Image (tube, rainbow, N blue to C red; front, side, top):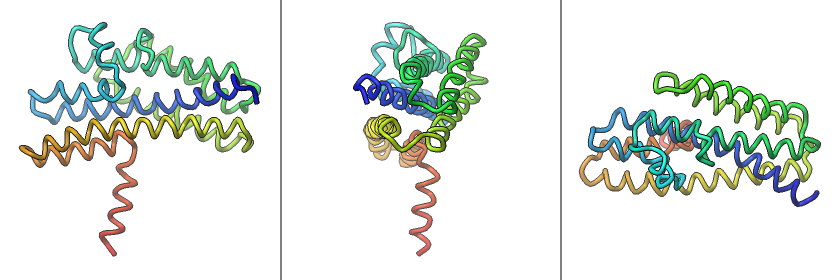
Length: 222
């Protein structure tokens, strides 16, 4: 396999994983901001920016951290290279480069996601309908993975897809754990209940809440 084809496959999968992670981070942070005390809400809203290392870029484009500004920046802003809009566009561009290495189902899952996202961006996303867009982003990522696992040969192309997916997942896990661990430890000193919510937010951000419950409920019942 040519190195440029391997690179496109790697980044295609990595970008799609990043889009899902971005949606989860924003979803959890908006929820945490609602249950937090007013003086701590900006800290909660800042979590996705801290995890992605994009706080400085955000402040160059937006005057203050508000839920709507975060939605615009992290979901739809084509000036931000790590927005969901930008990374799905990049994933689709990479998929186009290696169309011959993909099954029809995998290509259609990515191409359809890009077309639907352009329509969502045209209509706009607000706080009231953001949760539906978060769900949509997760669904499109799951459709891509399902198509890849179900229709691709287990060859080099498939292995580079897996490599991109799992490296992005490992990177996101380390970043989220770093930020949420710091916030949970700080909360434990004065607000033990808040620390519980921070660890719960960590699990939800990584789609690990149900797995955690199943694992540790089983252990506690032994």
